[in-house]
Image (cartoon, rainbow, N blue to C red; front, side, top):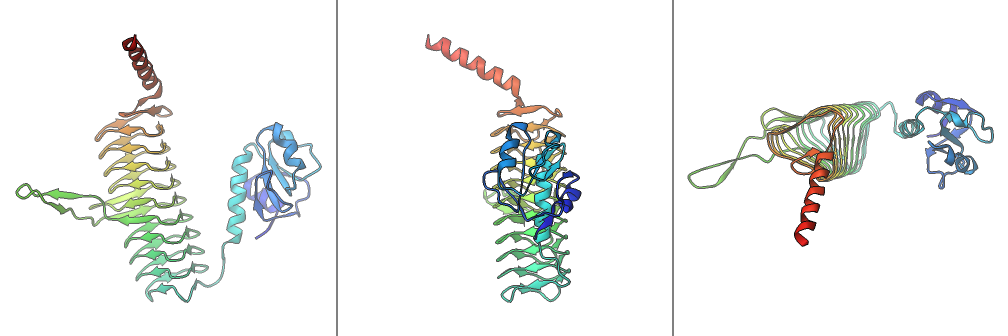
Length: 335
């Protein structure tokens, strides 16, 4: 769905210079842009390339205020405005109808409640007592278990599996192959015969508003209570969250990271790729842990704004000093 530049400017809080009636339908790179695309520049050195491109309009900082060869949207944060413009254009293309629509091959239980504008695609299965909010899309071959609640304006991509009892908020994006609410990895060992018996996994999974979950990511429900993913969290592809984990708001986790059970990740934490965290550990607000870092079970990592690295995780400066000391010792031994 195309929008006028004035509509986009108003939506992202930018100041428009130029013809606000021009229609734009998508965002693009400077090199690949066409006449109905929007591009952005953050550095003045790239402005001339953007203005000479085929793009219909440019988002830039105040340094572009006097340009007249192409409409310009002025923002103090062009990249952020560009991302918001992309979301605004995408929202305009999502089905917004008076009625829900399920493909003829989809299986939707009669007790399920589908709000206005809901779209259920080919071969999806929606079980009993499910509630899906306005304008949410359920992708092809997705399974939605009994009693699941999904909010409005969410996108569930194809082949997602949502176990019974899971709650998903508004504006949540779940990418293909994700598994939400499966059993946690919990067993009790019988000391007499050495066999393992399954510990009850009867809790639930709650995913709050504005969360994005990457492809093939898995999140276990709580064993007896709940696993919770806080508002605005962003999880990359191939992330695993164990049972009873509590993630705060605006947590960012990169690919191939694994969290054991009963871990607390507080607000605004950033975890790099391939991070591993042991059970019952806690990462306090604002901590950043670099790729392949590790936290041992029951440990607490604290220090808002501090970057940690290594296993066990240490402040990055301390860790690098230790690496340098080891390198010096190695050289001495060789001599």
